[in-house]
Length: 212
Image 1 (tube, rainbow, N blue to C red):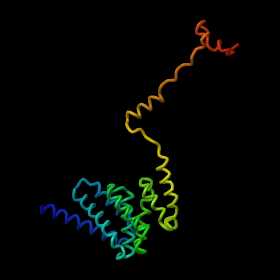
Image 2 (image 1 turned 180 degrees about the vertical axis):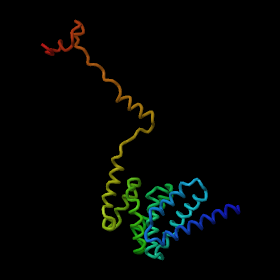
Image 3 (image 1 turned 90 degrees about the vertical axis):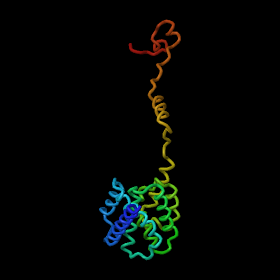
């Protein structure tokens, strides 16, 4: 138990050091997010612990954004949004994150909170087709298309893609049956009854001039 506690404390310490360093940057760099992805996909339990701590801290700190300096706020929002954009968290945490961001956009408690939501959303706007309910709710956000030019076009496309998505076979066996139907050879044309009796070419019996 002592080893586990020490392990957890070490992970939390590294997570806070990473976030402190990221918040001091002029802008969150691609390398910062790449490092997160490395921790997420690492086979080492400690690295995964660091990643989990960072995500948990980011989720918890969305409650006190009004206290953030603007540079730290911007970098935190970029990081939060890109974690969603790169699909680094499971569906449960993603849904929690989307609810938080939607609340920031629909009913921001102050300008900083609203700005955080806008910056975060920009990082994963190209994945909106995966969450049609969330995309539909974005229509309630006042002046969103002015804050993120073109976002409403993305929202409309996301909703349309959900409606027009073709039905796929529910089971591989169903797919094979459908494929066989298309591959079955067409039956040959029926012979004219008189031609069949006389052994004639059916075209001649039907009055086909054929060749001279």
